[in-house]
Length: 115
Length: 114
Image 1 (cartoon, each protein chain N blue to C red):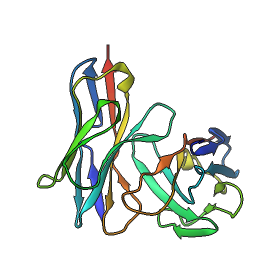
Image 2: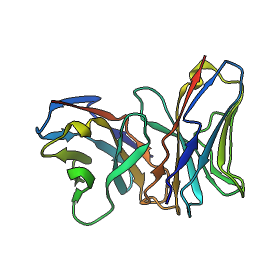
Image 3: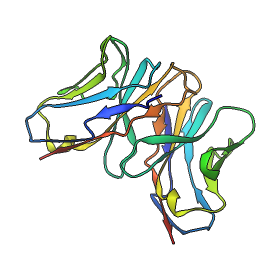
Image 4: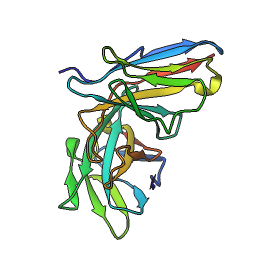
């Protein structure tokens, strides 16, 4: 049973370009969460999605960031017109259901570098 | 709303020595507590979690943690560390009342020296 998969593992973009980060949850998991990790900081929640629905995007910057989890295919985190401050590790996690006690299973992350 | 404080950003220790990584939390409601480990260039893996019952929780790789409600702490311990335990450790808390998004601490870097 494959774990959470993220690609690409490393992504380099120039300022102003778009970044697309993909996440395939574990088999049987219908809940996806995106987090951002900046150097020497913990994980900051960005968005929580179920298939075709955004449930909670309270951690998403208001501009340039968007996320989707279509009926078919992986979840996508899209960052338009990237700036240097977007450089970070972005982690996706999935869970089979929603409960405060549920373990979230994390992918290996995508490390975004903006030049 | 809840918050998590990991008091030490870095903990250096020699191999086979005991270690304790500290975690304190604040919350207006009852919580679930978690410890995750992150090895270099990898995602987070669950070490252990406290849901209810015994306050001493045993996890993988010989780690354990004790929930202390009066001190609002959930410190992680291991009696004898290995080089392979070198990693970043994150404490997290989620609200029993229904918030499904855990709040993470800033992490503690455990560095095990030979």
